[in-house]
Image 1 (cartoon, rainbow, N blue to C red):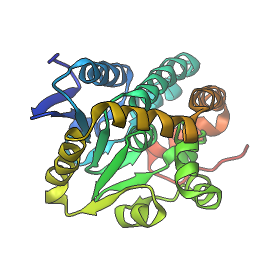
Image 2: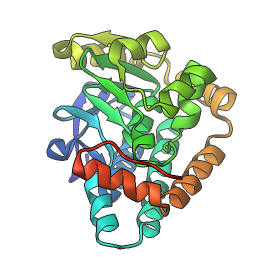
Image 3: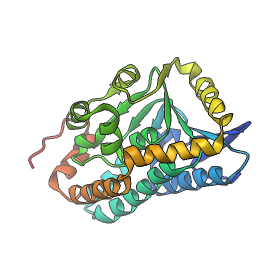
Amino acid sequence: MADFQTILLQDHGAVRVLTLNQPQLFNPLDAVSGTELVAALEGADRDPAVRALVLTGAGKAFAAGGNVRLMAEKVLGGRPTKPFFTEITAILNRSIITLRRLSKPVVCALNGVAAGGGLGWCLACDLVVAAQSARLDPAYVRIAVNPDGGASALVTRLIGLKRASEFFLLGRVLTAQEALEWGMVNRVVEDGQLLPQALELAQALAAGPAKALAATKALLNRAVLGDLEGILEDERQGIIELADQPDFVEGIKAFVEKRKPQFKD
């Protein structure tokens, strides 16, 4: 197995566990972590000894999405945001496509908050087992950008238009139990049982017929997410444009100053 800066790999028989490992930063999406996630997923897909995967996070968060502190440095320093978002959204999109196109099933062990791009990573997995303390946070509206990471499609097709509208337009944070009731996760378990339960599920998948599971995944993708690449690109272009607007600057400043934003546009 390859060594990565931001991801830990551990094999449990035919199941490979990928742990996002920047706990001090709440496992953010950045150029390194996004690129390494793609490499780790592709490596597992090529490895004949691996038949299923678990994706989880180290520490209190699963993945907190884009690094808002880094965004703040650019915004408050008067530097352009377009190059940053052009790069990071391309990396995020590639990671989402890789997760969905992987021939092997992926179980998300949702150990904490999944926000922003981390929400996309979670929901792009085939199954989601959530700890009771986990949360799903559509943080986009609080910094005046649209969803990314395929979340606009993944969420809407999981829970329907009305609930998706409430989730995104109001920025409603869901508890694990609420996410279960809304159909965004498969199971909720005690925090201490998260990894064992996710591994048990992944091991059941690993014992299944690999070619049939891969074919089924491809059919499900075509049925529900046939236009995923187009949606990802629409999300990407929207964020690149919105990140150049005054409301985005206000959202970032409000985050840094720990106050409610005052949007105008």
